[in-house]
Image 1: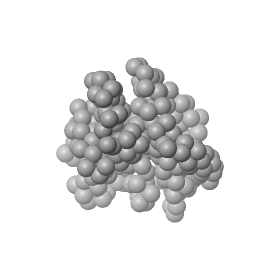
Image 2: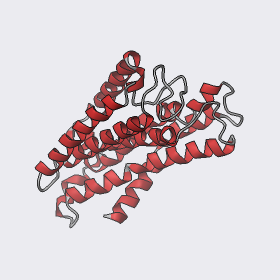
Image 3: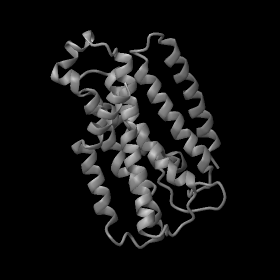
Length: 245
C-alpha cells in the first residue's frame, strides 16, 4: 500500500489541473510580490487556497476515478490489494497538493523575508494546506460515494457556491481563510476577530469527515467510518462555533 500511495501521489502532483493552478499562483505572486500589506498576507493564506483548492480536488478525483473511466476496475477485483487498501492509498496521495501548497507558502515567505505586512501566526500558514488537503480528500470521497459521470463537477460547484454564500454572510466562517484585518494573539485576521487555532481545527475536522466518507463504501465494518464521520461532524460544529468572535 505505501508503494501504491507514492505512485498515486506522484500522479496527482504532476496532474495538469494541479500544475495549472500552481502556475497561476506563481504568476500571481510574481518576482516582487504584491505591495499592499493585505495582498502580501493573502499570498500565503487566501490566494493560495483560491488558486489551488479546486485544481487539487479535480487532480485527485481524476486520478481516483481513472481506473473506472478506463475500464481497468472491471478486472482489479482479482488483485491481492482490496478496494479498502486502494482507497487508503488514494487518501494518502491526496496529501500531495497540500504539501505543494505548504512549500509554495514557505517559499514565498523565504523569498520575501517573511514580510507579509500583517502579523502572521503559524495557524494562518497551516490553514491553507489543511483546506487544500480537505479538497483532495473530498475528491476521493466523491469518487467513492458518487461514481457517476458529471457528479464530481456538480459536487465541487455546490461546495464552492455554499462556501461563497457562507463567506459573504459570515466571513470568519469561510474555509478559504479570506480575512481582511489582522488582530493580535490567537486571532483570525478578520472583520471580527476569532480564533485562528479553532479555525485550523475546523478545517482538519472537515478533512476527517471527507476521509470517513471515502472509506464508508469500502470498509469491512462500515460502522467504523460512519462513527468516525459522525464524531468529525460534531467536531466541525464545535470548532465552527469556537472560532467565532
